[in-house]
Amino acid sequence: MENKEIKIENIKVIQAPLAGISDVVFRGLIRKHKSKCLMTTEMISSEMLCNNPNPRIIKFEDFEYPLAFQLVGHKIDKMTQAAKIVAPFASMIDINCGCPVKKVVVSGDGSAMMKTPDLAYDIVQSIKQATNLPVSVKCRLGWTKDEENYIEFAKKMESAGVSFITLHARTRSQMYQGRADWEKIKILKQELNIPVFANGDIKTIEDALECINLTKCDGVSIGRGIMGDFTLPYRIEKYLNDGEIIAQPTFEEKISMLKEHLNLEIEHMGEINGIKFMRKFYNYYIQGEKNASKYRSALVTLDNQKEINKILDEILSLHYQNA
Ligand SMILES: Cc1cc2nc3c(=O)[nH]c(=O)nc-3n(C[C@H](O)[C@H](O)[C@H](O)COP(=O)(O)O)c2cc1C
Image 1 (spheres, rainbow, N blue to C red):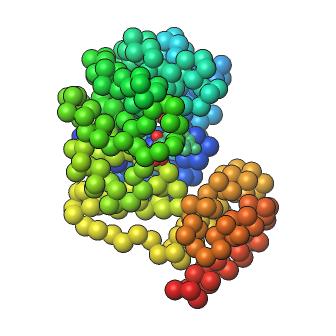
Image 2: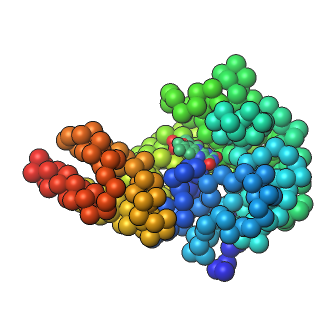
Image 3: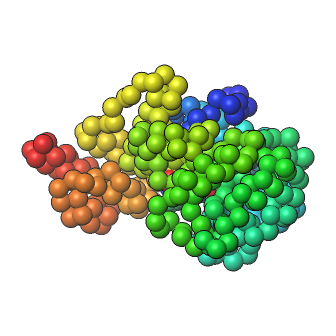
């Protein structure tokens, strides 16, 4: 195993976990495009892990470090046991206090944890004690607009000893609607002494700079912005570290990234599952292109890699005809 230790002060970009999206292949492509960002696994149910205590059911590779394992759950004993199972492989543990999905929050997990800050506090302390690893918390603004408690909640997590907070600047009731409210990240940054990472709607270098300038946050956490452009984390890091602006990939480069992504997912999960999995991504790669929705509809019905690549070539040649 390569050195899994993390130096949080060196982290400017976090790959935000995207369940069902940011798998080992996805994260590997971010590393291939030279980013040193902190990787995060998709959320892992602590209950599931305790029932099947094999950390290798979560697929990860040595070259991914630094790598945070994100746990979801609300029971102190299960969260602690799950953390102990992944600890030998984890640079740190991230606790999911942001997932808004009904089947997650119904049992008190994910963003419902923001309603039980004392419990979240105990979970952080118990995991820290049991693993000796840094712990972070990813949370939202609160449950609803009228119940925004991100400041109190994050302060409580700071007093529990978390190394940083990632704030997705939406409430649970917003799900993924509306704009992330970066002003609230600015407020939180002023209130805490630990680093704050900004999350929500950062899709370009310009977004990252605007967000950092406004909020004075310590770095950015990017989820959907990486879908369709694996170079984004590196380009942001390069700008923040060296002031160098690297152009975004050309459409031709994006299509070849997409083909490679498809190919690697097929190698990883087999042709049928890999092709099905990739249907979530086409839109991100081809949005804005002429006839994008027609091509997307065609791509999501195909179950043969050669045919998919043929359509991608067609989109590419149309792109340059129209350029
Ligand atoms: C499909 C999908 C899956 C997600 N899975 C997770 C997850 O496993 N853990 C988590 O903390 N957040 C999860 N999120 C939330 C993202 O990490 C992130 O907070 C949100 O998408 C806003 O950031 P973005 O605009 O950069 O995507 C998910 C979001 C989406 C759209």
